[in-house]
Length: 281
Ligand code: PLP
Image (cartoon, rainbow, N blue to C red; front, top):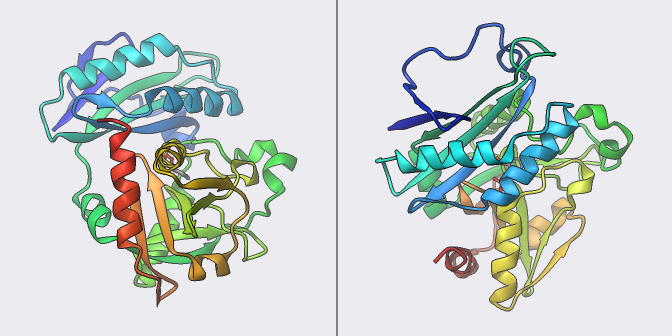
């Protein structure tokens, strides 16, 4: 099941061609995107996703996204979806074929990869991999677009394939000091320790996560404290729980890190997952 909508709210056949081969999103990865979870006909954290898309677009000097048009396209996909109870909604915004011309923009609803659904239940094995950036780089070099959700995800996907070669499911990127935790290729890292949740600050060149923010909100309601501060790799091994958070995977437990089993965090995971779902009940 797939549903495709353009920004005027019109639906289109996803099996038909719609994008020009010269599209700069295709030729250069020059564009931005968002992946939103839709559950029971509701787009979760849509406001933060649209705000982040506007921020990413601004970092790439793309025209400011038309908020009402994106909401219309989102609603058109949701209204015409007849697949599973939960699906992934991709919002894609590229520079189009001509840097001075019209951007390309569409919303596409797709089914969630069964591997992701399984990982939500079973957890994942993760390896740490170098990202080659230091925590001050994002501020010094804004042209590197660290922290923008650009379409240039080839590096992120290559890292996931490297994890598979090393017998793991996913990745936690580390900074050039090898000790500072950044994020996953498509997720944020959350660490639980003694009743507090920790995640690294977005300013070190990672994406500010909508799910991480939602999980922190939910956890605070359930009596946890939350802290945004640097996390070091040894902290991961000694934590009560390590999790990857993103819209479609929700909160996924890391059970193994660099081939070493981590502390069993099933109970913490169940508590946090329940608190997160309660936000949308
Ligand atoms: N970090 C990166 C690099 C991502 O690509 C994503 C989402 O795909 C996230 C973090 C998590 O963001 P969100 O929770 O808003 O989906």
